[in-house]
Amino acid sequence: MTAPAPRPDVTGLELPELEAALDAQGQPRFRARQIFQWIYKRGVDEFAAMTDLPQALRDRLATDFRISTPRLAARERSADGTEKFLLELADGRRIESVFIPDTPAMTFCISTQVGCAMGCAFCLTAKMGLVRHLTAAEIAGQVRVLAGSLGLRHEAFNIVLMGMGEPLHNYDQTMKALRILADPHGFALPPRRVTLSTVGLVPAIERLATEPLMPNLAVSLHAATESLRTELVPSGRKYSVREIIEACRRLPLQKRRRITFEYVLLAGVNDSPDEAARLARLLSGLRAKVNLIPLNAAPGIPFERPSDAAIDRFAGVLAERRITVSVRKSRGRDIRAACGQLIVEGGRRSPTQRAAALM
Image (cartoon, rainbow, N blue to C red; front, side, top):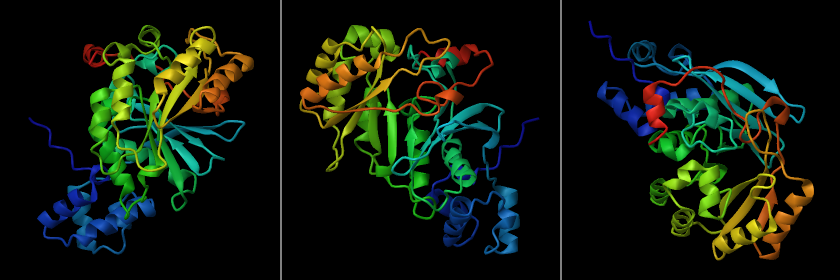
């Protein structure tokens, strides 16, 4: 006997999709806007609580649709105020999201996959491999949970797609989630408050150039030469440093926007003044800034953090060559919430998952 199809999840629908679904049932389209406001502005996750909708409509919505919300399984707070949220999805899989306070606007670090296929040598999430992509509902759902838990639903906040996973490997669902979050009847989150981090999947970067709501782009570079980068970022075997930089040069950047290049500094590997000079030459003429990230060392990562003197020397070489540079202050290291430290333990990958990691 065939199992019935699951009810559509309204949290994975953009407003025009929800309007069309209600229109097909003979309902006025403005009801979709009301539902969006209840879910995103008021944090409601049951149709029964949407009291400005007719009772008959609420009953029918509960029969025909569902509202999914990741379950908050655990929450840890760092000594520096950073908080890590362990969220459980409907299938029992778990992901991590991070809240970083005391930024110009509060920042949510959001995951786009369970695990990651990119295999970066210095990242704990890579140890999981790719388990599966997240849906748009699960990506946007993290923002709903964090905003509600932190009392920030009506406050300005930023999101960075720098949690578990490679956002551009899950392009369609990631961009759909951003459109849902940007809707004025929801969180009204503008693209300038969103930063998407990628290892540099060139075809997807080129697709970004066509997006009407293009987020800020952060490219995880970590080396200026092909040989070193492919050691650190295995996906570099498919897309070269030069190809990534040329794709970035073609992006139609708005005024005052720059592309951020993230560079994890590894002691004795990529932290020499010569490497800094090569990086400066590579980025010459590009509207760019470099975000240096001293390694957040952890068991299982075969590298060490450079000395403060080495970090300062590297940054100085870039600054001398007129490259805008900053050094990221690690947040949440004591609860393993810092960059490269997100990992959910347990579970062996299936052959299908292992194959997905090679895509």
